Length: 215
Image 1 (cartoon, rainbow, N blue to C red):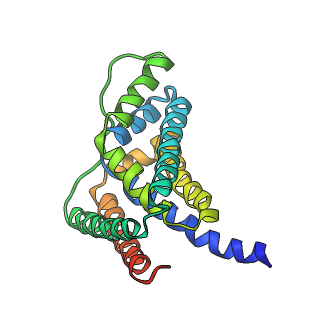
Image 2 (cartoon, helix red, strand yellow):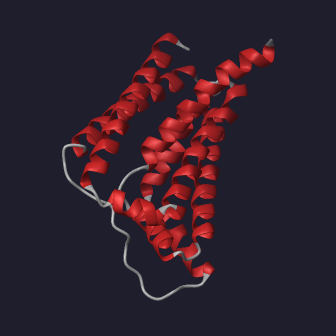
C-alpha cells in the first residue's frame, strides 16, 4: 500500500521536474548550437552529450539539496521563493509565447578543423558553465522548486529534471542529421515555443497553489 501511494505521488513530481527542465533547456543558444554542430559533424557526440547531461544533473542535484537545507527551517522563505519562482515562470512563459509569434531558427555554429576529445569537452564546458543563466535557471530556480518537494520525492524530481536534460542533448546530438532541417524551420520553433509557454504557465500556477495552500 505504501509503495502504491509513493508511486502515485512520485510520478507527478517526476513529470514536474521533467517539464520544468525541458522548458528551460529547449531554447536557441550557444550550447544547443554547439551540440547540434557536433552531431552534424559526428565528432565526439557521445562525449559532448554525456558532459552536458552530467553537468546539468550535478547542478540540479546540488541546487535541490542545497536549497533543501537552506529552506528546511524557513517555511516563509520557501513560500517567498515559490511565489518568486511562479512569477519567473509566468514571465518565461509569456516570453516563449512572444517568441512563438516571431520567426527564428537554430543553426550549428561554425568551427575549424577536427578537435581532440579533450578540446571538444573543454569547449562544451565553456558553453555550459560560463553561462550565467545556468546558475539562475538550473541551480536557483530548479533547485528551489525541487527543494520544496517532500523529502522522499526529491530524488524523483531530480531524476525527471536530469532525464529531460539527457533526453534533449541526446536527441540534439545523435539526431542532428534529422533534426537540423526541422530546427531550421521557423514554424517548428514557433510551435515548440507555444508549447513551452503553456507549460510554464501551468507550472507557475502549481507553484502559486503550493505557496498559498501549502501542498
